[in-house]
Length: 134
Image 1 (cartoon, helix red, strand yellow):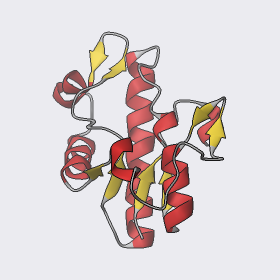
Image 2 (spheres, rainbow, N blue to C red):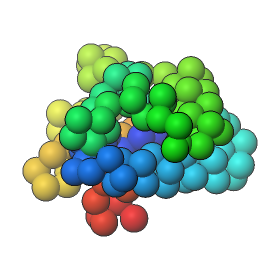
Image 3 (tube, rainbow, N blue to C red):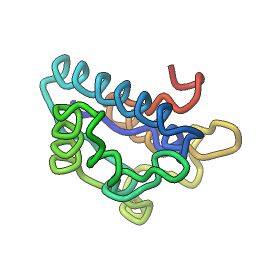
Image 4 (cartoon, rainbow, N blue to C red):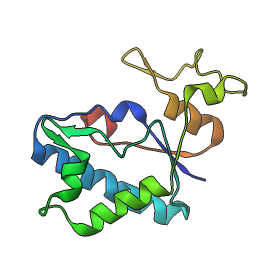
């Protein structure tokens, strides 16, 4: 069993730097808990999260350099990225997963991560960028 990121929850940037720090703290806390429960630290991601704007004017590189961010959180995020795999929609063109005809939608957006988790019996994890992902 593995974790699959709900890519719709990665609706960045959030509005403030503090909000971005909270989103990352909550996400990493969820990741740690799920890692313990399923005994697997690999996650399946929709893209490379080494570079993105976490909050307006505050990218993930600045978060990694931020002295107010816990060092263990930074290590955990780096470890998560290093042990994860990134999928592409193209990866599923010849498999049994019909991502184009998926019934997994949220606000008219195709939820590929949720579809993959459903089809494989895996777990979905989300960034808490919106109350809908609680």
